[in-house]
Image (cartoon, rainbow, N blue to C red):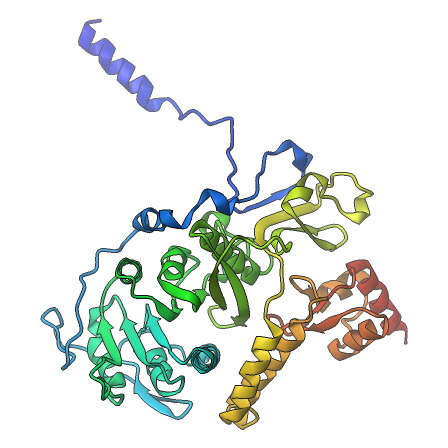
Length: 469
């Protein structure tokens, strides 16, 4: 056998050789985990994030590491035209929402998202009232309906409407054309651009052109926009984030949703936003969280401020026991002590831990109360189906803001299944829980679920008692 044939055989062996599997796994606090406790968790190595290791002056380098899509930037034109636009945009459906009429064109539009837009406008208007100014960046504006509502209903001083799809340009400009473009003082009230959302946000940060509210209505569970949005918002300003991938964010597809795992996607969303803020030297204060069945869509409004991660126990881990249904929150320092009451302090294979994630309240009760008052002032409540839906939602959010209520919720069908009885009426079990001294409310995320600080074992006992009555 000559030398050439030997080399050929060696190359073939190398090619056919299976890849070597790594025997070690490095877990970072920026990676969310969901795993059964088949061995003591104390044998794993964890460390909480330290905001002091990420000073504010590293913001630029962190932002430049963000991926940008290769979209051309089209600057604003007074006539809404563009050299890159083939003018094939269609006017699409004519929609009316809260008294405003607009066309959808060829953009992706959901009328079911109207309530989410109502919440955004109410929040923007409250910010305008308390701060006198309101500059909004709508990073993924679609047909421009949110930008229009920020201008007309929230009284925004300036709105930057951006969408990467330049084919939507005529639709966006047409919808905004009813608003004054240049104020009496000569300042612009709105502009339209077409660029990658991250590029626009990073450029605004580099220009020190900060906004009071940044709305990122993105698709999927990608967290790539949060960091640039937090950097581009003014101190004390608001960021309205989105997730539409409920499957991954529910923990069913962890390889696609590294930071959105486990049973309630909203707490993952908030945990991810909190980590991104800490990286940039900020902390966030969640104002409200909203879930809508279509999509599904999860939206969170939070305020951005300077400072360290508050040591208030709202960022940690959540356990769920498949055996007894009990759920608990644990801090970073309690990771080695996680167990379920049903296992008498021993490690149980039925226990699943998720995190790190947000374990605090879903809403700021006082803030949502102000939103409800403003909605009533504008006649958005109790006036037809849409008004009833918004009023009911805001009142449920206020109930969910009870500080005694824990994260997550309990489905009554799970309680009934474990108790081996018919599912008790929701009002009845809430009333009984109140009589027993527990905090309890409906959950706006699931219609047949409650939020309560009552343990699952006690809920099962109450369900059995109600069945025997």
